[in-house]
Length: 250
Ligand SMILES: Nc1ncnc2c1ncn2[C@@H]1O[C@H](COP(=O)(O)OP(=O)(O)OP(=O)(O)O)[C@@H](O)[C@H]1O
Ligand SMILES: [Mg+2]
Image (cartoon, rainbow, N blue to C red; front, top):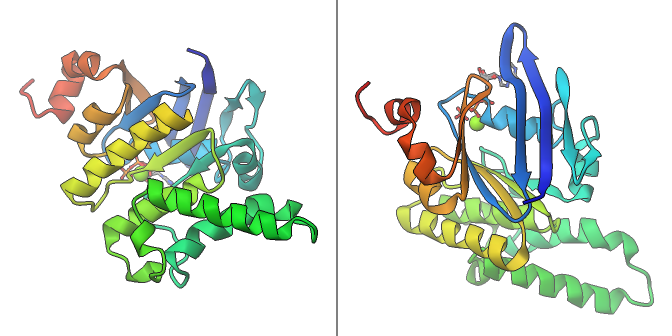
């Protein structure tokens, strides 16, 4: 499979601490990758580096073969990389509908002209509804986002991420605080996005059941380095993973 995104010797140090340490990895087109690792392993830092939220101390990030390492976040979004945050990040005072519509407008609004603005507006509304349906929030569309239950707000975040029409979607602990049912819905959503829309997905996750059921490839990160990488079956066989994550005796 072709690499959609690739990191080469990617490094980030904070003071003396290497949050990401000469990391080399690839995310293949259309694949769902899960990243696991203890608190402080560097999962969020990796997403921050890929999306331009922080600049690396060394190394590079390539997207479709192009070096995107020092581009600002908005340019990286325009290239087709979108993310969600570990802490829920929505427009709290807007309706669910507007939360999705606003970022779509930001993307296509620039091309609005007087002549086609009516058509464009209905296109934008249609796309908004389509995303709301995908993330299961169609019935909540007129509610103010801050009034939604936590799990719905997490789904809304995914919807906002999709509004920029990404090729690569990075989800940082998307199921945190979700009910088992909501988590199951998210797994289905990820599979649907990957299968039907060809979106490449990378997610970090503390719930191992979720990782093993949704991810085609799993990366185990520890202290900024990859300590294991493979399919769920392969990962489950690795001793260090069994000890650290699956509660087995050394
Ligand atoms: N802005 C920052 N300034 C200083 N240190 C930081 C900063 N961001 C992250 N770190 C440190 O880098 C390391 C990796 O943090 P990171 O948030 O990437 O881990 P994580 O794997 O996402 O953890 P968690 O599972 O808790 O979300 C930690 O030791 C953290 O304290
Ligand atoms: Mg994190």
